[in-house]
Structure formats: structure tokens, C-alpha cells
Length: 421
Ligand code: LLP
Image 1 (cartoon, rainbow, N blue to C red):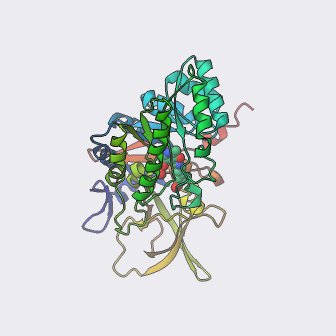
Image 2 (spheres, rainbow, N blue to C red):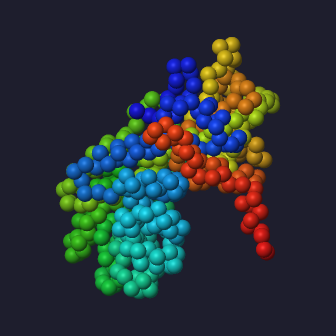
Image 3 (cartoon, protein in one colour):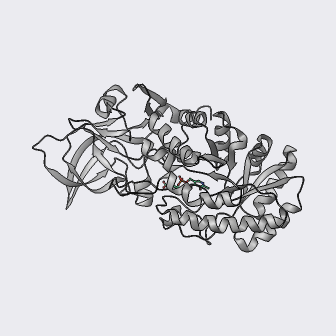
């Protein structure tokens, strides 16, 4: 069951509600529309897949940091994965259990590590200097920090280079050649650090579970080595990264169950607790960006649909050449011709496109047009470029009502940055 469906008369619906009707009930600007029940279903899919394992689902907050969504995921039983001091503060604000939170990153700051230490958040060690900072934070906080070593296993995730993180020349994690140095360093700080596990994160948009298995095999070998030196490590953290069907091609992609099943025996064989860090696969398909068509034009051999949304609201196509499925929210009149369009925004640069060469019925001015799978890395990467202020967010609740879950950013918000200077 998926939240976005077509009504019998051809309208795009979210949880049975026509998107067209939602558009008429909210302010006239691009907005993100989520399905709360779909978030629940996606989380339950992970929970069901993990049955029989001792596990923590650490939702990767970077994918979407809407506070209402975070509170919902926390209520469902999620932990959180954080990559900045403010993500850490937000997770605490949303009420996440700090001992189900993991602080990741290759440039964590001392002050943020101190907060993590005070609260009992797990911390991933990323480098020599990071270890020094974690030790310093433990001393300032007067608390021993539970740490995992982020190992860079050099497994190719077969994804866009910008979202690959676990190959040997990546800026993340530590290479196995240095493992012994880190084990010795942890041993020499028994009052500050407790080594509880090993972590890896290969990359994002991964569509083959064999990649996760290859990494997990390497990781349990490292854990064997670590345990052989007397460390009582309990946790294997295999990161996030499961991809989704952005193309809506009907291709059968691995599910959370496929992912967990491919590592289950390994995890059980070493009596480990499993941490996973999904972002995209929990939240991407629960949302679309709803836009209005401003007009249609032709230049040279290109047809353009110009919409009110843009790279400011949703930058993935511009930044990664990512494909996100696009469609109109209302059925086309029977006599409407189809053409091939680039779907573009009003932002003043040619990188501002949401989709290229899309076959669409020629839309009328004001028609609704959605960009699908916009729940992950869209709003959280939105900017105010060209002073396109960040859009509002709505979700449809279990009872079918529409609720605002984030206010629109306004011009006045921008002016406020200069008050009193
Ligand atoms: N854990 C770590 C350590 C990560 O670096 C990430 C994502 C995740 C978990 C969650 O990965 P996911 O399950 O969402 O694939 N902005 C890019 C994606 C960047 C992902 C960065 N790391 C995009 O829009 O595709």
C-alpha cells in the first residue's frame, strides 16, 4: 500500500485525498505534502524486518529534520543519527533517548562532543584528531563516552560519486591499516572511552543488497579482531544507504527485509546488536513537492514547463543529476497533446531544473505539478537562493485531515537577520 494513488477519474491522490483539493486549501506557493501513515508504514517495514534481532533503528536526521516528523518517528520507537551539533540539539528537543542516538561525522566540534558526552550519546570515531577531541570532551563532561570506530571498508557502493562514502579515498572513517593505532589509543584512555562497536556507511541510493553483505562480512572480521584484543564490543552499525525506486519503473528493488536478511546470520553468529541508519528509505517516498505551472514556452528545440518551485526548494536534480518522477495532479483533457518538456523553475541559472525531457500533457497555467519522492534530502537541502523562501510543509493524518507541520518562511524572516545591526 502506497500513499500516492490515482483516483478512478484520474486525479493524483495522497491517502485518498485529491492533491488538487489540498492545493486549493493552502497558501499559493510550492509546498511539501507528506503522508503520516506512509511514514509509519515505512518504519514498521524496518521494525518487522528486524524482528528476532537486538537492534536500533537510527533515523538519519539529515534526510529530513521536520520536528513533527522526528517526534512521530521517535514515538514509533526510532533512535537518531546526527551529524552536527544542531542535529544533536534537535534530536534531544524532539525527545529521542540519547542512548539510542549516534553522533557521526568527520568534523565534529569539541563543544558539540561535550554535549554528546554529557547526554550519553554514542559517538563514532572518525580520525586521530576526532579521537583526541572525544577524549577531551569526556574529560570536560566528566563522563565516559561510548564510541564506535567508523571503519572505511573500501566497498564500492556503485552510486553517484557525491554520495559514495565507504571507498578508500573518501574523507570518512578510518582505514583498516590504522585499526591497531585506534585500538591502542582507546586502550590508553580507559577512563574516557568505552569501545562498544564498529560502524561503516558505504554510501546512499544503494540498490544491491550484496554490497551490504560484502561490507558486513568485512566488518564482522574486524569485530573478531577487536574482540580478540579483549574489547567487549556489542554493536555492528552498518549505516544507511538503501535506495528507492525514483524512476517509478516498477523495477523490483531490495526492501528493508532483503537488506536485514542478508546480514541477519552474520549478526547472530557473532551475537551482535545491529544498528542501522536509514534516511532515504524511511522518508523519501512519503512526500511530494507540489508546484503550480506558471507557463509553458519553447526556445530552439526545447519546450519548457516553468513552475513556481525550483532548485531552491529541491536541489537533487541540479546537484546530482538525480531523476525524480514528475506528473500533473489532474487528468489531461482528452484532446490535450503530449510533448517533451524540461520542467524548470524561476531561479536565475540554467542549473535550475527539476526534470529533463519529460513527456507530459501540455499543462494549463496554474495546473498542479508534483515532484515525487521528495521526503528525503529535499526540504533539508532547501535554500533561500533568489530569496525563494523555504516552503511550508503539510501532512495528511491517519483520519484524512490535512495539517500544517512547518510554517512557510517569509520575507519578514529574512529582514529580521538585519534588525538592530
Ligand atoms: N548514515 C550515515 C553515516 C550517512 O552519512 C548517511 C547519509 C546515512 C546514514 C543515511 O543514508 P540514506 O539511508 O539516507 O541513504 N544528499 C544526498 C544524500 C547524502 C547522504 C549522506 N549520508 C542525496 O540527496 O541523495
